Image 1 (tube, helix red, strand yellow):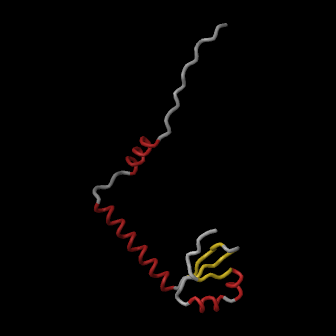
Image 2: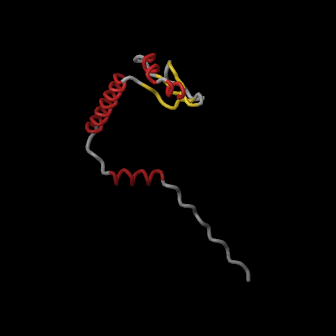
Image 3: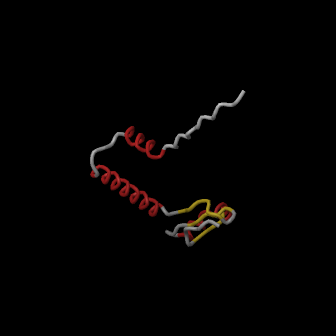
Length: 102
């Protein structure tokens, strides 16, 4: 069974029946929407969603800055060439067979 990452949950059927009631009961807490007892979606408040986006953007900006500060850029072709050399499949060695007697 998959892990449900919310303290509240609701079935898709319940959500279809009364979406306003589900949102009202949830308040600012996330709600797992279950389909056959497995998470199909999560409902979160606009405030939580905005905070998540802000955090993701801040993390992305920080990661980009770390990359910039790490030194000069390396051309993608060089990176791919190094990866191919390092992780390429070894070429099988084919041994010649001896001559057959006619």
